[in-house]
Image (cartoon, rainbow, N blue to C red; front, side, top):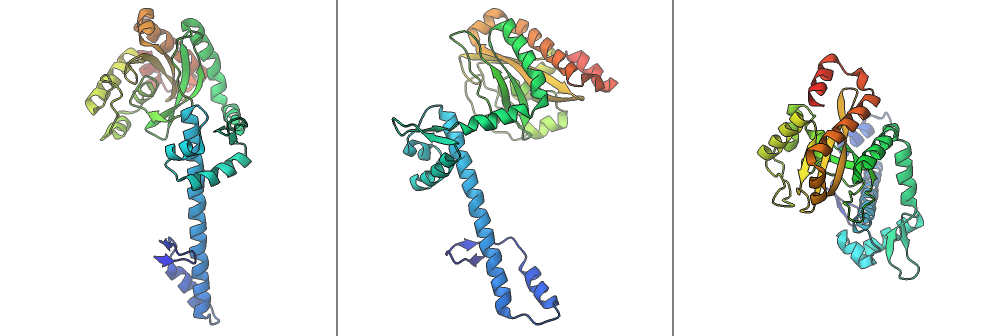
Length: 314
Protein backbone atom coordinates (compact mmCIF):
# COMPACT_ATOMS: atom_id res chain seq x y z
CA UNK A 1 0.00 0.00 0.00
CA UNK A 2 1.42 3.41 -1.00
CA UNK A 3 0.35 7.04 -0.65
CA UNK A 4 0.46 8.89 -3.96
CA UNK A 5 1.08 12.58 -4.57
CA UNK A 6 -2.69 13.05 -4.79
CA UNK A 7 -3.09 11.62 -1.31
CA UNK A 8 -4.70 8.37 -2.45
CA UNK A 9 -3.91 5.06 -0.78
CA UNK A 10 -3.16 2.63 -3.57
CA UNK A 11 -2.68 -1.13 -3.67
CA UNK A 12 -0.06 -1.49 -6.39
CA UNK A 13 -0.18 -4.63 -8.50
CA UNK A 14 3.38 -4.61 -9.80
CA UNK A 15 6.25 -6.43 -8.09
CA UNK A 16 8.61 -4.07 -6.21
CA UNK A 17 11.29 -6.76 -6.10
CA UNK A 18 11.40 -6.72 -9.92
CA UNK A 19 12.24 -3.02 -9.91
CA UNK A 20 14.84 -3.31 -7.16
CA UNK A 21 16.28 -6.49 -8.72
CA UNK A 22 16.59 -4.74 -12.07
CA UNK A 23 18.54 -1.94 -10.42
CA UNK A 24 20.87 -4.31 -8.53
CA UNK A 25 21.55 -6.36 -11.65
CA UNK A 26 23.02 -3.40 -13.53
CA UNK A 27 26.80 -3.17 -13.75
CA UNK A 28 26.92 0.51 -12.74
CA UNK A 29 25.66 1.81 -9.42
CA UNK A 30 22.13 3.21 -9.18
CA UNK A 31 21.17 5.65 -6.49
CA UNK A 32 18.31 4.80 -4.15
CA UNK A 33 16.63 8.00 -5.35
CA UNK A 34 16.43 6.53 -8.87
CA UNK A 35 14.59 3.48 -7.54
CA UNK A 36 12.18 5.70 -5.62
CA UNK A 37 11.47 7.76 -8.75
CA UNK A 38 10.73 4.60 -10.70
CA UNK A 39 8.42 3.38 -7.93
CA UNK A 40 6.63 6.74 -7.85
CA UNK A 41 6.15 6.59 -11.64
CA UNK A 42 4.64 3.10 -11.46
CA UNK A 43 2.30 4.15 -8.64
CA UNK A 44 1.04 7.25 -10.48
CA UNK A 45 0.58 5.23 -13.69
CA UNK A 46 -1.48 2.68 -11.78
CA UNK A 47 -3.68 5.43 -10.33
CA UNK A 48 -4.14 7.04 -13.74
CA UNK A 49 -5.23 3.76 -15.35
CA UNK A 50 -7.62 2.98 -12.48
CA UNK A 51 -9.23 6.42 -12.69
CA UNK A 52 -9.61 6.06 -16.46
CA UNK A 53 -11.25 2.66 -16.09
CA UNK A 54 -13.67 4.02 -13.50
CA UNK A 55 -14.60 6.92 -15.77
CA UNK A 56 -15.30 4.59 -18.69
CA UNK A 57 -17.48 2.31 -16.55
CA UNK A 58 -19.37 5.24 -15.07
CA UNK A 59 -19.93 6.73 -18.52
CA UNK A 60 -21.33 3.42 -19.75
CA UNK A 61 -23.58 3.30 -16.68
CA UNK A 62 -25.01 6.71 -17.59
CA UNK A 63 -25.73 5.55 -21.15
CA UNK A 64 -27.36 2.32 -19.93
CA UNK A 65 -29.49 4.30 -17.47
CA UNK A 66 -30.63 6.75 -20.15
CA UNK A 67 -31.52 3.83 -22.43
CA UNK A 68 -33.52 2.00 -19.76
CA UNK A 69 -35.65 5.03 -18.87
CA UNK A 70 -36.62 5.63 -22.49
CA UNK A 71 -37.38 9.32 -21.90
CA UNK A 72 -35.37 12.53 -21.43
CA UNK A 73 -34.07 13.03 -17.87
CA UNK A 74 -32.77 15.87 -15.77
CA UNK A 75 -29.14 15.65 -14.68
CA UNK A 76 -30.30 15.01 -11.12
CA UNK A 77 -32.56 12.14 -12.21
CA UNK A 78 -29.84 10.60 -14.36
CA UNK A 79 -27.23 10.85 -11.60
CA UNK A 80 -29.56 9.38 -8.98
CA UNK A 81 -30.60 6.46 -11.19
CA UNK A 82 -26.95 5.72 -12.03
CA UNK A 83 -25.98 6.05 -8.33
CA UNK A 84 -23.49 8.84 -9.02
CA UNK A 85 -23.13 12.25 -7.40
CA UNK A 86 -24.25 15.23 -9.46
CA UNK A 87 -20.75 16.63 -10.02
CA UNK A 88 -19.36 13.33 -11.35
CA UNK A 89 -22.40 12.85 -13.56
CA UNK A 90 -22.08 16.41 -14.91
CA UNK A 91 -18.43 15.91 -15.87
CA UNK A 92 -19.21 12.62 -17.61
CA UNK A 93 -22.20 14.13 -19.44
CA UNK A 94 -19.96 16.91 -20.83
CA UNK A 95 -17.59 14.30 -22.30
CA UNK A 96 -20.43 12.15 -23.67
CA UNK A 97 -22.06 15.23 -25.21
CA UNK A 98 -18.82 16.05 -27.01
CA UNK A 99 -18.96 12.64 -28.70
CA UNK A 100 -22.68 12.83 -29.50
CA UNK A 101 -23.58 9.95 -27.18
CA UNK A 102 -25.67 12.22 -24.95
CA UNK A 103 -27.59 15.26 -26.17
CA UNK A 104 -29.32 18.10 -24.35
CA UNK A 105 -32.78 18.99 -25.64
CA UNK A 106 -32.76 22.69 -26.62
CA UNK A 107 -36.20 23.58 -25.24
CA UNK A 108 -36.06 21.87 -21.86
CA UNK A 109 -32.37 21.15 -21.23
CA UNK A 110 -33.25 17.53 -20.48
CA UNK A 111 -30.71 14.83 -21.34
CA UNK A 112 -31.29 11.93 -23.73
CA UNK A 113 -29.26 9.49 -25.80
CA UNK A 114 -27.46 11.18 -28.68
CA UNK A 115 -27.43 10.31 -32.39
CA UNK A 116 -23.98 8.71 -32.16
CA UNK A 117 -25.64 5.74 -30.43
CA UNK A 118 -27.34 4.93 -33.75
CA UNK A 119 -23.94 4.84 -35.46
CA UNK A 120 -22.67 2.17 -33.07
CA UNK A 121 -25.91 0.18 -33.25
CA UNK A 122 -25.85 0.20 -37.05
CA UNK A 123 -22.17 -0.80 -37.11
CA UNK A 124 -22.89 -3.68 -34.74
CA UNK A 125 -25.70 -4.97 -36.95
CA UNK A 126 -23.68 -4.65 -40.16
CA UNK A 127 -20.74 -6.64 -38.85
CA UNK A 128 -22.93 -9.65 -37.99
CA UNK A 129 -23.20 -11.94 -41.01
CA UNK A 130 -25.38 -14.33 -39.02
CA UNK A 131 -27.96 -11.63 -38.30
CA UNK A 132 -28.35 -10.94 -42.02
CA UNK A 133 -29.72 -14.47 -42.36
CA UNK A 134 -31.95 -14.01 -39.33
CA UNK A 135 -33.99 -11.07 -40.68
CA UNK A 136 -35.92 -13.04 -43.36
CA UNK A 137 -36.89 -15.59 -40.71
CA UNK A 138 -38.17 -12.85 -38.41
CA UNK A 139 -40.15 -11.32 -41.26
CA UNK A 140 -41.74 -14.68 -42.07
CA UNK A 141 -42.54 -15.26 -38.41
CA UNK A 142 -44.18 -11.86 -37.96
CA UNK A 143 -46.23 -12.19 -41.16
CA UNK A 144 -47.54 -15.54 -39.94
CA UNK A 145 -48.39 -14.39 -36.39
CA UNK A 146 -48.70 -10.58 -36.46
CA UNK A 147 -47.01 -10.59 -33.04
CA UNK A 148 -43.70 -9.09 -31.94
CA UNK A 149 -40.82 -11.42 -32.85
CA UNK A 150 -37.14 -11.37 -31.95
CA UNK A 151 -33.79 -13.06 -32.30
CA UNK A 152 -31.73 -13.62 -29.14
CA UNK A 153 -28.15 -14.83 -28.59
CA UNK A 154 -26.28 -16.12 -25.57
CA UNK A 155 -24.26 -13.52 -23.70
CA UNK A 156 -21.46 -13.98 -21.14
CA UNK A 157 -22.24 -17.59 -20.39
CA UNK A 158 -25.32 -17.39 -18.18
CA UNK A 159 -27.20 -14.55 -19.87
CA UNK A 160 -28.80 -13.69 -23.20
CA UNK A 161 -29.53 -10.55 -25.17
CA UNK A 162 -32.04 -9.75 -27.93
CA UNK A 163 -30.27 -8.44 -31.03
CA UNK A 164 -33.10 -8.12 -33.56
CA UNK A 165 -36.77 -7.29 -33.04
CA UNK A 166 -39.77 -6.76 -35.30
CA UNK A 167 -42.79 -5.29 -33.57
CA UNK A 168 -46.39 -6.39 -33.96
CA UNK A 169 -48.68 -4.15 -36.06
CA UNK A 170 -51.38 -4.39 -33.36
CA UNK A 171 -52.01 -1.34 -31.18
CA UNK A 172 -51.78 -3.58 -28.13
CA UNK A 173 -48.46 -5.40 -28.31
CA UNK A 174 -45.55 -6.58 -26.23
CA UNK A 175 -42.18 -4.90 -26.69
CA UNK A 176 -38.91 -6.74 -26.11
CA UNK A 177 -35.91 -4.60 -25.23
CA UNK A 178 -32.88 -4.86 -27.51
CA UNK A 179 -29.38 -5.03 -26.08
CA UNK A 180 -30.33 -5.53 -22.42
CA UNK A 181 -28.71 -8.66 -20.91
CA UNK A 182 -31.04 -10.94 -18.97
CA UNK A 183 -31.00 -14.40 -17.41
CA UNK A 184 -31.05 -17.55 -19.53
CA UNK A 185 -33.45 -19.10 -17.03
CA UNK A 186 -36.54 -16.88 -17.37
CA UNK A 187 -38.93 -16.28 -20.24
CA UNK A 188 -38.85 -18.19 -23.51
CA UNK A 189 -35.84 -16.93 -25.52
CA UNK A 190 -33.24 -17.69 -22.84
CA UNK A 191 -34.53 -21.12 -21.80
CA UNK A 192 -34.74 -22.14 -25.48
CA UNK A 193 -30.96 -21.63 -25.58
CA UNK A 194 -30.30 -23.06 -22.11
CA UNK A 195 -32.12 -26.33 -22.80
CA UNK A 196 -29.85 -27.19 -25.74
CA UNK A 197 -26.61 -26.85 -23.79
CA UNK A 198 -24.81 -29.91 -22.35
CA UNK A 199 -26.18 -31.10 -19.00
CA UNK A 200 -23.01 -30.24 -17.06
CA UNK A 201 -23.04 -26.70 -18.48
CA UNK A 202 -26.70 -26.26 -17.53
CA UNK A 203 -25.90 -27.45 -14.01
CA UNK A 204 -23.06 -24.92 -13.66
CA UNK A 205 -25.32 -22.08 -14.86
CA UNK A 206 -28.29 -22.75 -12.56
CA UNK A 207 -26.38 -23.98 -9.49
CA UNK A 208 -26.99 -21.55 -6.65
CA UNK A 209 -28.74 -19.12 -8.98
CA UNK A 210 -30.80 -16.45 -7.21
CA UNK A 211 -33.64 -15.49 -9.55
CA UNK A 212 -36.01 -12.59 -9.00
CA UNK A 213 -39.66 -13.50 -8.47
CA UNK A 214 -41.26 -11.27 -11.14
CA UNK A 215 -44.66 -12.97 -10.85
CA UNK A 216 -46.08 -16.00 -9.02
CA UNK A 217 -45.34 -18.01 -12.20
CA UNK A 218 -41.60 -17.21 -12.38
CA UNK A 219 -39.38 -20.32 -12.01
CA UNK A 220 -36.87 -19.58 -9.25
CA UNK A 221 -35.52 -22.97 -8.10
CA UNK A 222 -33.16 -25.44 -9.76
CA UNK A 223 -35.91 -28.07 -9.76
CA UNK A 224 -38.34 -25.76 -11.58
CA UNK A 225 -35.73 -24.75 -14.17
CA UNK A 226 -34.69 -28.35 -14.86
CA UNK A 227 -38.34 -29.34 -15.25
CA UNK A 228 -38.74 -26.57 -17.82
CA UNK A 229 -35.56 -27.67 -19.62
CA UNK A 230 -36.89 -31.23 -19.90
CA UNK A 231 -40.18 -29.95 -21.34
CA UNK A 232 -38.37 -27.78 -23.92
CA UNK A 233 -36.26 -30.73 -25.04
CA UNK A 234 -39.34 -32.89 -25.42
CA UNK A 235 -41.41 -30.35 -27.39
CA UNK A 236 -38.62 -28.54 -29.23
CA UNK A 237 -39.78 -25.09 -28.11
CA UNK A 238 -39.94 -23.04 -24.91
CA UNK A 239 -43.11 -21.50 -23.48
CA UNK A 240 -43.32 -18.62 -21.04
CA UNK A 241 -46.76 -17.77 -19.65
CA UNK A 242 -46.81 -14.77 -17.32
CA UNK A 243 -43.29 -15.49 -16.02
CA UNK A 244 -41.93 -11.96 -16.47
CA UNK A 245 -45.24 -10.09 -16.53
CA UNK A 246 -48.81 -11.13 -15.82
CA UNK A 247 -49.86 -9.73 -19.19
CA UNK A 248 -47.33 -11.33 -21.56
CA UNK A 249 -46.50 -14.71 -23.04
CA UNK A 250 -43.67 -15.97 -25.21
CA UNK A 251 -42.84 -18.98 -27.35
CA UNK A 252 -39.27 -19.59 -28.62
CA UNK A 253 -37.23 -22.23 -30.45
CA UNK A 254 -33.48 -22.82 -30.60
CA UNK A 255 -31.27 -21.84 -33.55
CA UNK A 256 -28.21 -24.00 -34.29
CA UNK A 257 -25.02 -23.50 -36.27
CA UNK A 258 -22.15 -25.96 -36.70
CA UNK A 259 -23.75 -28.36 -34.27
CA UNK A 260 -24.17 -25.93 -31.38
CA UNK A 261 -26.99 -23.70 -30.20
CA UNK A 262 -26.26 -20.06 -31.09
CA UNK A 263 -29.55 -18.34 -30.32
CA UNK A 264 -33.32 -18.52 -30.47
CA UNK A 265 -36.29 -17.12 -32.36
CA UNK A 266 -39.24 -15.98 -30.27
CA UNK A 267 -42.83 -14.80 -30.56
CA UNK A 268 -44.06 -12.56 -27.73
CA UNK A 269 -47.43 -10.95 -27.18
CA UNK A 270 -50.35 -10.34 -24.83
CA UNK A 271 -51.07 -13.57 -22.99
CA UNK A 272 -54.78 -13.77 -23.82
CA UNK A 273 -54.24 -13.19 -27.54
CA UNK A 274 -51.43 -15.77 -27.62
CA UNK A 275 -53.69 -18.31 -25.91
CA UNK A 276 -56.46 -17.70 -28.41
CA UNK A 277 -54.06 -18.36 -31.26
CA UNK A 278 -52.96 -21.57 -29.58
CA UNK A 279 -49.67 -21.85 -27.70
CA UNK A 280 -48.81 -25.23 -29.22
CA UNK A 281 -49.69 -23.98 -32.71
CA UNK A 282 -47.31 -21.02 -32.24
CA UNK A 283 -44.67 -23.34 -30.81
CA UNK A 284 -44.76 -25.65 -33.83
CA UNK A 285 -44.58 -22.63 -36.14
CA UNK A 286 -41.56 -21.02 -34.46
CA UNK A 287 -39.86 -24.43 -34.21
CA UNK A 288 -40.26 -24.95 -37.97
CA UNK A 289 -38.90 -21.52 -38.89
CA UNK A 290 -36.00 -21.87 -36.44
CA UNK A 291 -35.23 -25.28 -37.94
CA UNK A 292 -35.13 -23.79 -41.46
CA UNK A 293 -32.86 -20.99 -40.26
CA UNK A 294 -30.56 -23.57 -38.65
CA UNK A 295 -30.26 -25.36 -42.00
CA UNK A 296 -29.08 -22.08 -43.55
CA UNK A 297 -26.47 -21.66 -40.80
CA UNK A 298 -24.26 -24.61 -41.72
CA UNK A 299 -26.71 -27.08 -40.21
CA UNK A 300 -25.53 -29.61 -42.83
CA UNK A 301 -22.12 -29.73 -41.13
CA UNK A 302 -23.55 -31.43 -38.04
CA UNK A 303 -22.21 -34.81 -37.10
CA UNK A 304 -24.56 -37.75 -37.61
CA UNK A 305 -25.00 -38.13 -33.85
CA UNK A 306 -25.95 -34.48 -33.32
CA UNK A 307 -28.18 -34.47 -36.40
CA UNK A 308 -30.13 -37.44 -35.06
CA UNK A 309 -30.52 -35.70 -31.72
CA UNK A 310 -31.87 -32.55 -33.37
CA UNK A 311 -34.26 -34.58 -35.53
CA UNK A 312 -35.77 -35.98 -32.34
CA UNK A 313 -36.15 -32.44 -30.99
CA UNK A 314 -37.49 -30.68 -34.09
